[in-house]
Image (cartoon, rainbow, N blue to C red):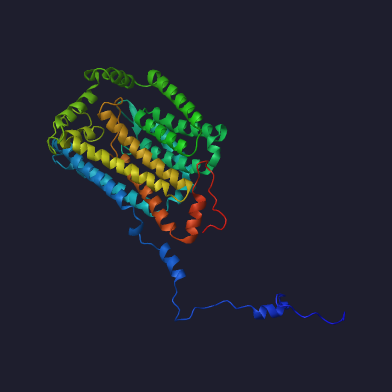
Length: 442
């Protein structure tokens, strides 16, 4: 009985040799029959090849376009008299402004079409180039009104480009730090050195408004990246103390006079400087509905720089409170779209870059509006996409193109299954670490 084999049970798996298993295994399908519809592969390929129009942020394009249109209209309104006297053509300055807009449109288009993640490879070189130009303008720049801010006969202002370069560099640097941003030696100390060097070179020109934009934009980006709030407040106190010292001891007299006149105007508006008083008069003349396009009076030799720094006051006089309010609403819409793009970005670099560009543009607008309404001391700050400008216009439109590129890449790449998985892994949590998908989650 011991030599008789036991019968095979139904639950026992049959035993095969390796050769038998290979022969029994089903062969993979090499080709799909002609009658079978191919669905899966073309679907993914179709998602990858979304048209350019389908990936554009139409609301943001409309907002920027309307701002540019208002700017062209107001530049003509503020310069037609001057252009006629100087160049015997009422549209001479408008033509220069449209030329700058055309160069800016080319910059916007290039930034839109290029994947924004490419710039991450060149951030160090971009920062070094910006610092080199800032040093160069101090040594060889054109001196105007006691300041050295421009090169090449005033056509290029390195400080304007430095604003955008700092935003791009910090987005790449902070995005790669993760939780180390909250530490002193890996976060606050190098951040202070980077921003301090760039901002210090701008202050040395002197150009306080540009330096202030750099400090505010960088500080908010540092906070959004996960910086420790106590260290951030300590850094803000240090910057404020250094700023007061520089303002009182190292800057020209006119800067201190602006601060003194602003302090006096808090209780008595008639004690404000000439620029602020003329801006307030322009708003008073405009009322709710304005005097009418081109009918403003303050732009004729009373209001300083009506086509650049004071253009919002001209808007208030000619288009009234409603027109000025519409411009403010456009900047609010820009901020909403920018932060929405940042929230939907696929990686920390894109999120911080979108947030930084949005903060940079909106801060400029807020400071210009605050100066014209006597809420802060007077400073030379153009109104984004509206004021006449060369370097500022081109750089601002390049920044808008970067913002649109982040949206385009997010829409294009988040549609495919493998990109969705990458996006989940890239998006950062509140503690700065990468979010890891749960096991088995689809």
